[in-house]
Image 1: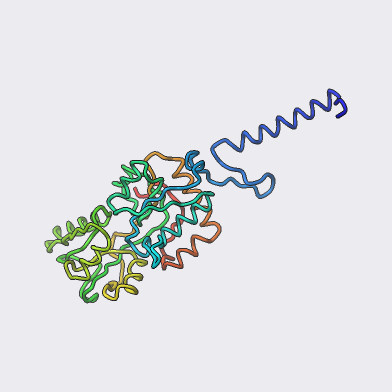
Image 2: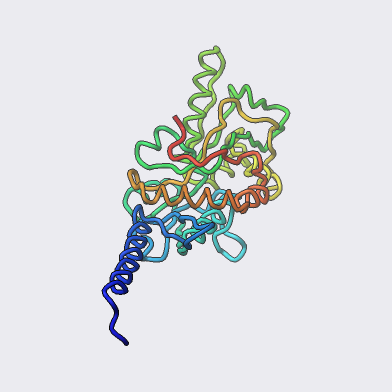
Amino acid sequence: MPAQSPEEEEMRSMKVRSIHAALACASLGGGLVLSAGAGAQTKPALPAAVAEAGAINVGTSLQWPPYEYQDEAGNPAGFDIELVRLLSAELGVEANITSVQFPAVIPGIQSGKFDLAVNELFDTVERQKIVDMVDYLNVGLVVMTAGDPAAISPGDLCGHSAAVTKGVAQIAVVERLSGECAAAGKPPLAIVEMPDASQTMMAVVSRRADLMFGDAAVAHYLERTSGKLKAVPGIVPGTRGLVGIAVKKGNAGMAGALKGALEAIIANGSYATLLEKYGLGDAAVESVTINGTK
């Protein structure tokens, strides 16, 4: 190679410094730059340990169709499962899904066993004390019964008994409604607490409880598949709320990556397509929030 003049050597050094500076800027904040120039954008980046592992560990119960359940081949299926796979693909990693009993889902996040959890988890102020919630749905509760739907009014459930799964946010809903009954001088709404979702459904089918709660997607699925449960028309007043993906409290990197991935699938239309597939068209969030319930 012929010797370079001092001017040529200086120009070469400036180019090298420019490349190094660009690479340094790309690494700030953990973002990955897809390309330079027009149309460049920054993809959300996972915490380094998760990205290096190439997989997200997901906790769920696979007991609450159509959100999470086992298909005929025994594989994880449902809205939340498909959502997690869309998000993991957006983030460039696999999704390792582990099923546990529902009461063990949140503790699995706290212990570090899971990177995230999905189980139609309502974002409540109480939950925010122990995990952070990345919100992706806004749903209201529907009443389901094995009896006569015309005999139950979503606006007045006093004197009935409601089956709920241990550890779910619906317990607080039943307690609130029962308190409102008592304040009005009416019989309370009794709680029949069950260890898992399948036994909650069976409690209603066997008439151990008058009713159970679920959103429109759950109601549609159970009406179609159970042959026993029927939805009562209308939303239970005061029950519309945010549903979120749970991550470890204070894990801003994971929460931020999921928020960015959700915003990406909203922008590319795959979020809307998934909502429509499961009858959740009216449950779309207007914007993705973290701990949006106040």
